[in-house]
Amino acid sequence: MPSRLGDYSVRPRILLIGALALAVGAVAALVADALLKLIGLITNLVFYQRLATALVAPGAGHHPWWLIVGAPVLGGLVVGFMARYGSEAIRGHGMPEAIEAILRNGSKVRPRIAQLKPVSAGVTIGTGGPFGAEGPIIQTGGAVGSVLGQILNVTTTERKILLACGAGAGMAAILGTPIAAILFVVELLLFEFRARSFIPVAIASGIGGIMHFVLIEGRPLFAVTTVVGFGPYFGLGGLPLIALLGALCGVVGSFLTKLLYRLEDVFRKAPVNELLIPVLGGALVGGIGFFDPSVLGTGYTLIQSVLNTQYAANLAVGAGFFLLALLALKALAWTVALSTGSSGGTLAPLFMMGGAFGALVGLVFQAGFPSLGLTASACAIVGMVAVFAAASRATLASIVFGAEVTGIYTVGNVSALVPLAVGCVVADAVALYLIGDETVMTGKLTRKGIRVKQEYEANLLEMVPVSEVMSPKPRALPATMPAAELRGLMEDIERPEYHMRSFPVVDRAGKVVAVVTRNDLVRERDCLEGKTVLDIGTKDPTVVHPDESVYAALQRMVWRHVGHLPVVDDDGRPAGYLSRGDIHAAWRRKLSEEGVREGRLHIRRPARDATSNGPDRPRS
Image (cartoon, rainbow, N blue to C red; front, side):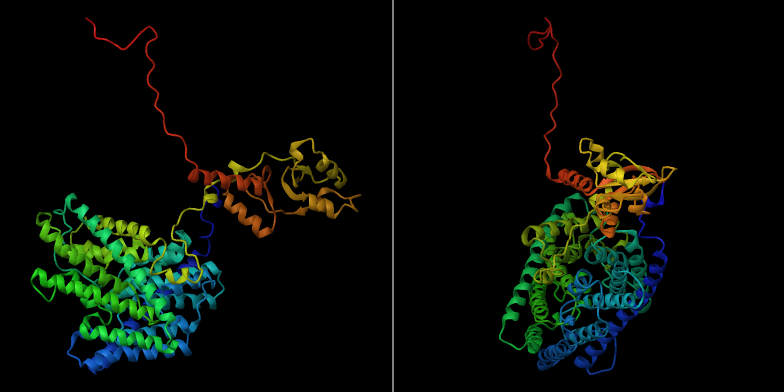
């Protein structure tokens, strides 16, 4: 089989890009570790007045009220100055900025983003901002890959791949979820699933995952140690309840998305200096933290407590009140902080809110259907990723996140992926129905007029070979043919085989050596005497083979600014002719497969015996 049938974009630079992905993954993982240490350092300095880098919860101690309220204000002030005098791109959670860099800026990120984004996120989260570190590290890791791609001699596509490598490696390093990071990057950054990009991203994310367990923590970020209720005893009877939970999570995810952008509109129109809007957001977050300090900071410890049902209250009613308060206050703090331009990630807050909501619903399921063995912990895990799936539309990544970030695939829960998949898919479907294509990750871009495609499918024209749509073998002109005779051929409108804008020119062996067109004839019309068709034609023309895709042919047409290509066999002899009209016909045929409804299948009744005069009757 000719090599041209494969993914020609993979060879031969895949080894180079793979090696660069290895380096980008290592650097992004080191930056992720540094970001976590920076968050820990600022948190310890501000809330505990000690010099340490361990991640601690801002609300874990007994702090004076003015510190709880004032710390987020200070963080907002610092971030406001950094955005004003550094770069506005540090605002937000990082994903829209990374996507915009790919879609609008040729995957070029300014080097200062790699410096300012982690610092701004460290300040925001360290002073109590209700965010996770994963969003900023996606943008920072992506900036590392992009800057490397701007230094080296690579294409725009290769630079996009390096940006995605940095983003995936950073996420894998923070969460310890390399497989989910790969899927997340494929769904939200790469906009393709091809070997040329998948292999480097897998390499970088794998390095990030390894360095998580070596540098950051020797277990998944939200390791579940209790019996979660996904074992063999979880039968089909529990799946309808999981589907119901997924539908409810879809409603929650849709509500959070709408609330976020409605608040963003409110603060954008507020009569407040842009520099002070993050300060206002910090004051509101501090006020919320006054009532419940646990909503401040990354919330990583609290998420793990929710997943392991380690609540402060022992009674079901007390636990339910705790979860409901956590859900409401975290939702308010997160949407306010993000809509006012603070710097931080969305994944951890969505995980916390989804986990709290899932556990709350799980308590109801436990009380109403105790025989199913469906625990609050199991529902918390499903709720955690289902809300994230509804808000982000990264459904495949969400399913794998549920298993990887909790480690439940390592404790004999072989059926865990089934309820995770049911919950995430139903949540995604409900969110799609309620809010359409708007998501937490892309809503900011949609409002700027940037369209983000969220459905990925194979290029229709890549699935059609040239041989299926090309015109029949054209008349080939000998290279020695006088050019003056060509005028007569093109004017012979009675013969349909001559209704062409170009003819292949062949040598004595029958191989295509040139193409002569009507334009060539017009250009040379005053000096045709003594010239051959080879003299006036285009030598060494661009050709296409019958087994190549129509898309490959279209790329050559666009690149060479031509509207037709000769089709040649493996020996270089004419095999056909491909025009724009042929490509349009192929495209129409493929589109009709999606848009044209065919008739229903009609099953003929068997013919009755001709000698029969009526229905069969039993013999007497």
